[in-house]
Every structure is written in structure tokens, then in C-alpha cells.
Length: 230
Image (tube, rainbow, N blue to C red; front, side):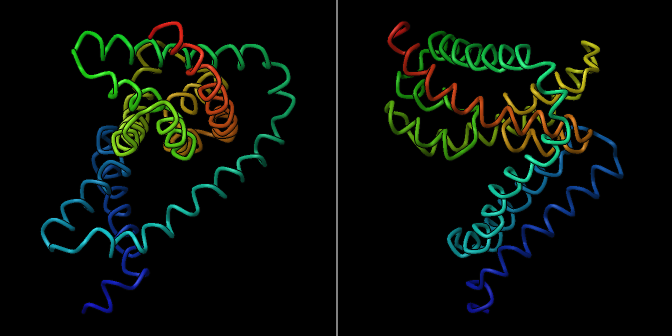
């Protein structure tokens, strides 16, 4: 039994089963709140707690699943190439939209921390919450954040965008495919891009583009704004 648990295939299998369970629940209920990513995360946590299986044993396989996030993101270059004309036609709105998203993220986190009385280190940890994990972790460490809090914030930010994004779009009647894709990628990074791809190729390609640009702008803008605000 010990050999089975320590085998990387075990972690991969548990991840796939949990995700399929999340997909099944969402299809049966049709509720946006029952997002497969959220459900699978909760199921895996409960499974590890109930069985007492060490996280490191599970993560031996979890790392294999995580590895494919990067090539999957890079593969978004294909639909982006197919929609290159659409990109060039909306170049400035896209760039300004992503830039605005990065600045708004900084400002909202700043006032949230200030009004709740949290320590300054929490601010440094939460600022990179809307960018992809590698960039977010590196930035968090550079400005004095707590990496563990940053990882949790990135996951929560992604799940929140995936769950609330469609609801917000519906309330404000945002139907433009480019705008929806940019919103997903800028606020919810890779998790948001999975949702954008479900909606369509244009949404997915624009979301994938936003991940890279938002990450680069965050790495440049955040240090500059820290000097102004702090």
C-alpha cells in the first residue's frame, strides 16, 4: 500500500478522479458555484485529511499535472496566431485594459489591507495574486511577501474569477469576446484561461495573451507603485 501511495501515478489518478467528480456535479446541477476546479480542490483536501496521506506523497503526482500548465499555456499561441488580425485591430484597447487591470489590482489590495489593519507583509503577499504562479512567487519574494500566502491568493483569485466571471459578464451584459478573454486572463491567470477556452477560441487566445502581458506589467508597475504608496 505504501508503494502505491508513494507512486506518482497515485497523485495523478486522484487528481483526475476529483476533477471528473467536479465536472459531473456541475453538469448535473448547472451551478456556476460548483466549478470543477473548486470542487476537485476541496475533494482532494478532504481525501488527504480523512485518509491521513501525506501531502508530499500526493504531490509527487500533482507535480506531473502542474507541469503541463506551462506547455498548455504556450500552446495558446496557436489560437492567438489564428486571431492575429483581431489582436492587431484591438491592440491599444487590449494593452490599456490589461494595464488598467494591473493598476486596479494594486490599488484594491492596498486599500483592503489598509482598512482591515493587516500587516504590511500581507500587502506584499497579496499584490501578485492575479498573475501566473511563477511570476507571482518571484515578485512576492523580491518585495518581501510570504510565498505561501501568495500561492493561496493566486489560487483563490483564479477560482473567484472562474466562478464570478460569467455572472458579472451577464449582469453588465458584456458580450464582446475580446473583452471577456482579456478580463479572464488579467484577473484569473491560467485558471481563468481554462474558462475562457470553454467559451471559445477567441476568448481563450486573448486570455492567454493577457497572462503574459499582465505578468510582465505587474513585475514592472508594482515596484514603481510601491515607491509612491509606501
